[in-house]
Image (cartoon, rainbow, N blue to C red; front, side, top):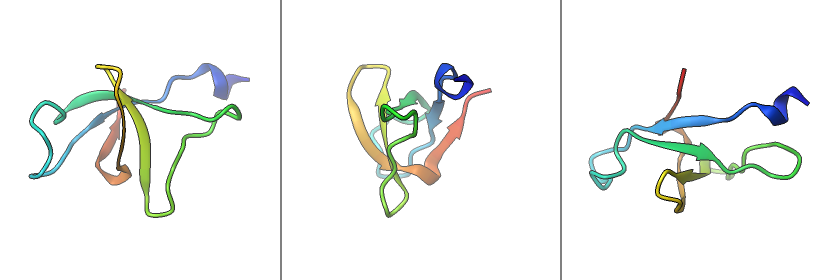
Length: 66
């Protein structure tokens, strides 16, 4: 139960091709009903940014908020 109660929040580092509005932007992992993050086979991750849009991004460029 504790796993479902925690919030998985990150900030997205981005790279040189990333839109400037998305760099260092806060985002939240989209999770399944079982509470797991949605990850791709290539390391990508489905996240929802503060503006409400969901995007698939490279998981290596995410850093957890403390």
